[in-house]
Length: 280
Image (cartoon, rainbow, N blue to C red; front, side, top):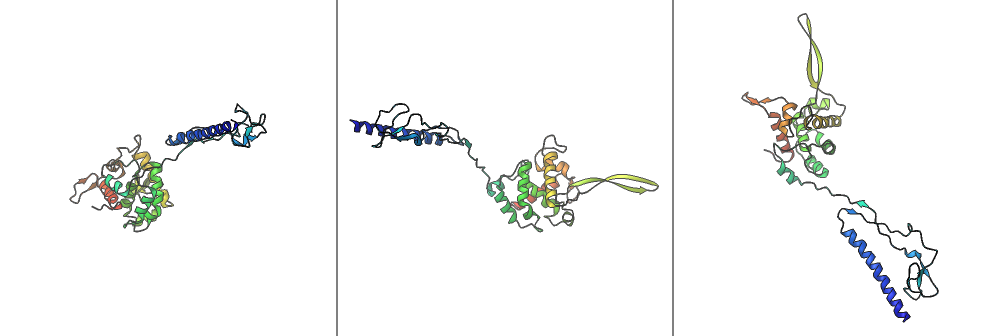
């Protein structure tokens, strides 16, 4: 009889342990993104050897084998010491980036340029480093930095590169190199000139000088974000290349002399196509 009781109790204990384990596993597997539960389990360190077998009651004996293991009265462990915790944590979300082919398909003249293209940093840097038109290395040197700027200030990095390409002649402009100004950021200065006996004071736009390429690119990104691509910006007209064109650059002229309202936008868009390997 005692042997049967022992066997029965041992089987019961095993079933309890398996049930607790299955419950923890089930709750862990059923939660997507978050593991949120805490479980308390009796620490096996609270079980000790007893001299005589006893029936299972609260805080007494657990008879599992001939050694008759039990919890000794008055020597229960602190509840905190016997707690097994499944920590609450948020699983890292995996950001889904677009492939180069997907970004190429999304390229349109009237696309939204107020957010990044969708390329991962690795893919963008690889794209720029394999580009054929980087005559001075300015694109390769700054590819990772520009991707970071685009995500920090929320603008399309292909568009940003298109501005650099268009304004600096793919990095080859002597003026751009001399001033570290590859995006034609201007400032207004006062000038004086004599007209007869009078001295006339007038304002003139000149290229800003930067101590580094990176300073130019960051100031340009801030300028685009705050003034051109934000609804309360001073030059906001929308979030397309053409809407930025309205204030960023004066209207051009066609070869026959007729007005070319969006010449700058078309030139920047053409550079974007070339950067993505979609030459016209």
